Length: 181
Image (cartoon, rainbow, N blue to C red):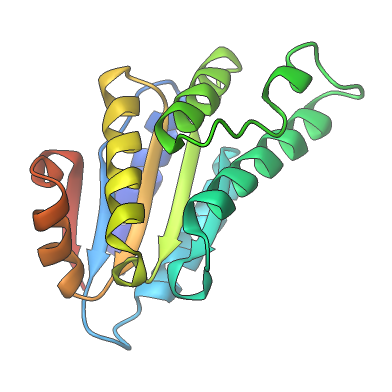
């Protein structure tokens, strides 16, 4: 796990410095430490000071809505913490929900870039995502990558996630770095 944490820290520092990184998916059987690793990465994200949100896909009923809500919350919290008053751009992005995950993530990615920030998504049990949600997430990440926005994902799931991604996204092998635990 030390190697994964060291690599994650390097990715997070690069992201914070405005250099978008390839998203990482950890996969393996139940009980190998995927969730524990994501929690350790979340601590690193907080130390580096990135905007972030953590979701457990298995416990989510409406993944896309919950993701956009959490992105809005982390944006609002960071804006309020970084300034004593709401910045001018606060209302333009608070509560953004265009009903299009790609558009929402691009807007938040642009806000992060404008504020010398980065966004890190941490998603556990990704194999539990509905195909439509998984496809929407990969499309949104792909668009953020195309625009060189500072948005990345650390995800975890069981090996079946690889097959599902292969079916929903032909460019998954370019979008993600896959690491077996």
